[in-house]
Length: 106
Image (cartoon, rainbow, N blue to C red; front, side, top):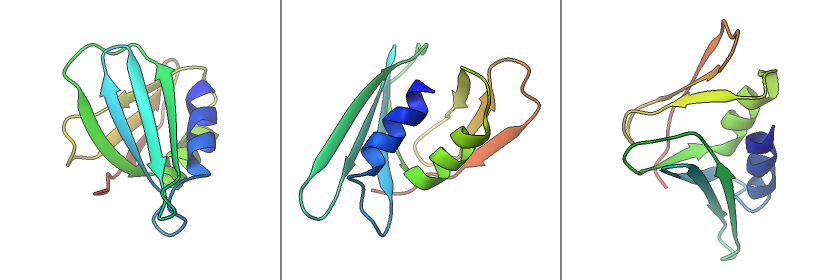
């Protein structure tokens, strides 16, 4: 829920044509950054349970919001291998559906 709200807020300042947002995943935090041709920028930070190397990856925020809109649980598992590979989203508990979102270059 908190993650979906953060994406919704940053989407307001994403490029209207490409809808790209940059995720900077670091231990214990995801930073969501969006900017547009008018040089406006939005940044949001969300606390997460993550331990590992920092990863920076871009996504179409509309696709992420579509997936988060159908997930009903309070927690979401986001699996990333590298910035050029797809992301796998699933509910942390009792989820029987998997969602794949492809990254985009920003």
